[in-house]
Length: 291
Ligand code: MD3
Ligand code: FE
Image (cartoon, rainbow, N blue to C red; front, top):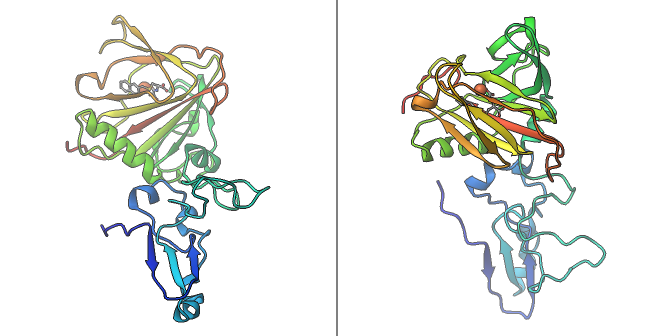
């Protein structure tokens, strides 16, 4: 990986004139680039060719202050005290989350769902489930009744491949698994479960994955729920655990095959997801796990 440049380069001149180019930079550190949308990675807000355009002024003795990083990383066009430079227009953030055209810079689960909307699901026996699902990754878990059940390459309803798993999600899941003692986790599925108020998931265990030595990483978002987990037998006693926005569980080893479920979702409002709970489970469905 290349060394990150300093945030700006100063070219001292001889004349009493300083030309500042806060949006001339295009550099994106790898960890930030991984979290941006593919479009944001094209750094459209760049003031292209500025140093070339003002080379003549530099030749006449002007000093130049040139940003190296994209404004999507740090926007250097600001007053030292944060005062609005263009009264009446919105003040751009030091670390922007939107482009000048008000498009979102960072990839999100919502963007995957825009490509592959949530669908109604059915149990293996064909009974309707209250959870709606979607997927991203090389594989996805489909439960569209007679049209397909289990892991598939594409959505059985549309025939289209599941959208790719965003790099930031893949890396996050990998890091979370490693932190829990499972290095080398390389998920090929992110199953997205959406719970409206009252939706639930009955007691089950996850047995459709090829290599049960791989852990499963789960991330809870939105409204809190009551998660229940028991033992290796369906009839084993269960314990209940409240899962809140941002909670992460890593299930591996002896816990991998425990029976678990989700109680009917209590009513509420979440500032990001409204009256819903989303759960992301990262899995190795088809790949072998080598810890
Ligand atoms: C324990 N999802 O998608 S996440 C599922 O909240 C599923 O949507 C629940 O059960 C949800 O299969 C629970 C926590 C979880 C996920 C996978 C596990 C717990 C697990 C696999 C094995 C053991
Ligand atoms: Fe499960």
